[in-house]
View (tube, rainbow, N blue to C red):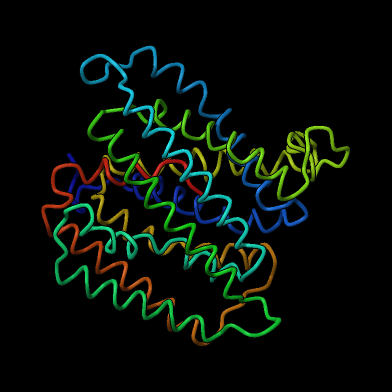
Length: 330
């Protein structure tokens, strides 16, 4: 049971803070790897995370007691679909980092609470006033940020659109994970490892075809296993252990003491934290006037959606599992 704010221990907030900072740092670190093609970068990240997840998968799978004591064909289909969404998320988001500013990329890729509202009627979920108001404010803010697009500038429409596609695919990944984690009671590693590993596999032929990478390329930044080179290994180790494992694990651990709505609300400030981390690493921050105004509106709109979710029955029974389903992102 989640403790109330007065009894929440200090270390729980420290764990949550470290987790959010780790997750928020991914965009800036990916940008530091700009010499590597974006899809190959994404594949490296997923490959590294798969290796990190493997021991946990082996341990949990041995003690796995799934409903009806069997993994159904439909479960495997959901795992497959989830892996496709995860691969698409990383490919589109990391590509966007090369084609728009870090702030714009983070604002659009974390807009998934607004996108969820669009799919709620399709899923048979009641759309209430707070959902509509939040989505309208958020999408209006997104439109305002586009005013800062300049011909030949760092902020581009195609880059923002790619980041938005990254958010759309996250929604598919979340819903797939929600079914397996909540309905079918898959342990986190039993779910996360096969999905992450399959996502890695999907990106291999894509990077070979679209980016010209290969298994035998002598240039590490164009090789499938180039991440093992000493120049790139520290980046992949950090992305896999930092945002991939510690960030996710820290955030999920915090659910034990901190309300899911509080955690998810703080996660809405990932673009802010990510921009500050990017500024710390590079000394630069592209932040136009309309990006500032629109960004605030996007975060505020997503916040309204989260508040409405917390107030309704949509997340009453399994809200903690819903947020856990986000998995090893960023």
